[in-house]
Length: 171
Image 1 (cartoon, helix red, strand yellow):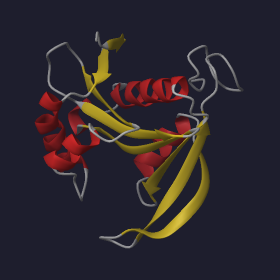
Image 2 (tube, rainbow, N blue to C red):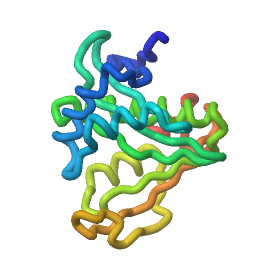
Image 3 (cartoon, rainbow, N blue to C red):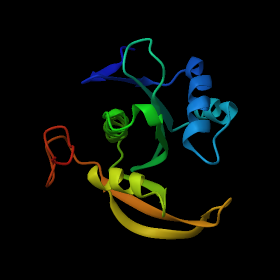
Image 4 (cartoon, one colour):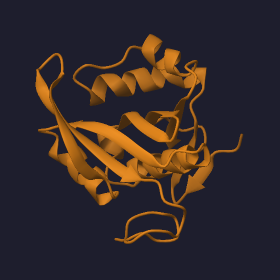
């Protein structure tokens, strides 16, 4: 399968050969990282989809996304970009490619959780059209921290207020 390229970013489905790089990315980006084994396991779970982002074909994995689709809902499980690759559109490309794929599988809405104190992630998702729909106190077991639940409709391309032809929120 040929990777999707938008701008300077190449997004493609994750393969088993990517799991070591993704595991290393996990260790940098999360306080409780998934192991290589957990990352590999997601590749085998029915309804689970994983994408990786690179700036060049054959270049290092700079970001990745894991999401699941069940019935008409997409659940974003993980989305991360290495600190050196941030603010260059990689996270946005991963998120919108994942939403495009989930929509093609019949998902009508996307959901995700964000740590209450993660202002960078909150701003990122809000700019991408997600809205706060709830809270889950004590959701993060290791810190008993509250998770904020966000949701976004997965409109058809060109549809909905504030979206351009790709379904992205206006700049």
